[in-house]
Image (cartoon, rainbow, N blue to C red; front, side):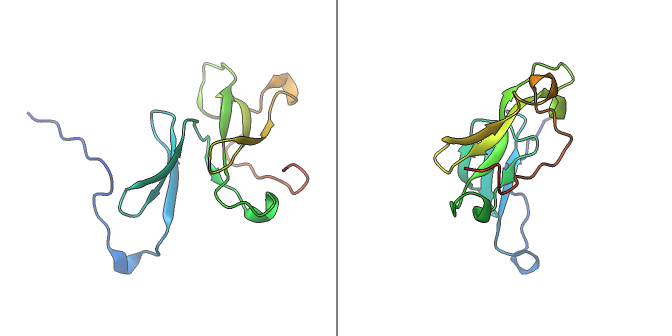
Length: 122
């Protein structure tokens, strides 16, 4: 029996979608931005738990900043419990903002979604 591993976009009906991008983290803990053809536009070597595209209104007008997990807490449960610090990377991958060590127990461990407030960004 043969095993087939599908990769990339397997079906696209352009009449049923808006021209857009998809941000996701793969099983390899790399966050990728892909276009609708499955082409990697940009990638960052950090997991997103979950990854976020950040609103330019909250980061001095910069387009392309993302929110990801920057360090792990070491919690064996993984996922959201493993977020040591979460933060913001610019398009080039430079850290712009980080939070978590000042949280209770020294780790972010946020539950699912998170948003930046205007006072938190730089």
